[in-house]
Image (cartoon, rainbow, N blue to C red):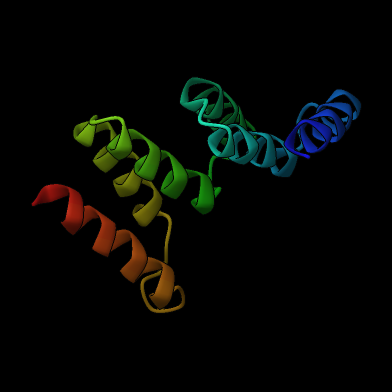
Length: 105
């Protein structure tokens, strides 16, 4: 099933290589099959196309933390949180803060 989704996503990516949603989705699929290096590659491509993609910063924070790279994880989380309006995006702001606290302890 995942292979079929990846095939469809790659076809969509071929049609529009700058589509940040597709890049993010490919990264998520690679996370699902435990290929963190490929996930990182596509998440970073996503940020090049959409440098304000909050979800990508969060996923990279989670991913780097799971790889034991806490400083890198915190860096991505800090970048993401800097893009948030803590009043309008209260739930997302708290999710970022919570993960940052978890990593810091």
